[in-house]
Amino acid sequence: MSLPLPQTVKGDSASDRLEALGMELPVLADNAYYVDHRAVDSSIHISGQLPFKDGVLLGQGVVGRDVDLETAQELARHCALNCLAAAVQAVGDLDRVRIVQMLVFVASGPDFGLQSKVANAASELLIEVLGENGRHARTAIGVAGLPLNTPVEIQMICTAVQ
Image: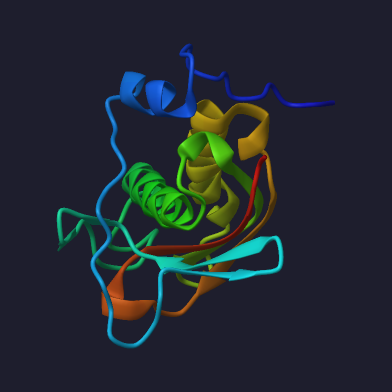
């Protein structure tokens, strides 16, 4: 039995679809210790992104204890949006981004087994914005802790569409 796929928002371009969702790509802050992306051959490796918006971390805590599922899903969407911003830095245009793989880290206790539901929110955003170029291989992992006590972190591998 196959599950229904998220629907792509109507629009001429990925940027139009992002705007129709009421979202825009953020400007990512520079970091002295790492870069937001690194190209290796045709692959673009996106550094782990936290749910920052306008320089503010949107949440802290452990999912299932301090943070509910719906909040974690929204935080995952912000992480994915930040990953898209890094991908656009690398390829120049949102319509040229194809997601290859997404790795979702969820700070959660040993009894929380819904990491994939947290990750689904990010996957859904990518498909809504990028269409088929947003479909990807994915892993969702529960971890004991993440930087800055954030509930979610996402890392991606992308490629540029010609």
